[in-house]
Image: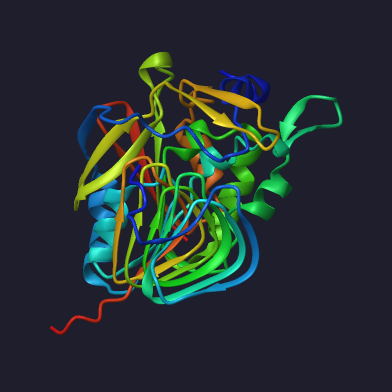
Length: 114
Length: 238
């Protein structure tokens, strides 16, 4: 599992947040969040201990833990091998490692010029 | 044939979600599929199709369909059928799976939503109590003229009939990947460590042609493809 890089905002595994989470910097989340997460223009990483029940709107989303909710990513989504995702994914690019679990739709929106 | 309770003994799950994914590096066998070949003409000649993949989450399938401009829905019904909360008893006290609860939690889509359903080998491995309700639900979520592909074993090959995942690698070519033994310890909600032990799913029954025709009797048409590896491929049209 990749560890969070220094300088990254972090939510540790003992933290539980219920409500609306928004910000303008990249976030590493290894705790629990219920509600919604909006990080437009920035990335969210759900760590291996992370348990998210929220809709997510971000530039990039990396999931190593459990995420229940729809993901809207303007750039890319990565589901690592330990990821368990229940929800629809809308993004431009997606990578899914062998072993990841997904229950939901994958919708790729390509905005690149032809 | 294994019973519901035996399956649950084998698939002991913690609360952290599914664990019966193939081990890293498990061998993949390449297989030609006439049914897939016929079906692929649909997605190669159309755009923006809605495709439902009922097998284990396959990065290859997701990549394949999204590169073709289609929307893919992934839902692993075999894993979902191992939810301990589905266990109930019938009038005779026999342990069965609650098909109503199963369909309340799974395959929840609008009517006539999908152009294609990839069933793979699901009916061979799904518990008896769920097979007909699931096929009924698949009929309702398929569009009229929508197509469903399913694979059936032509004989009970016992340990030689392991449950596979299917990865599309070409218009009529699949990679089959056996779901193999995996042990994993996970922490449950109480903090206790649960050990998941799985040897994959066991073949529940062998359908003959008449059983299959009966199973899909509400569909408009059915086409069989018999392969050399004792697999009967079935392509049905709603």
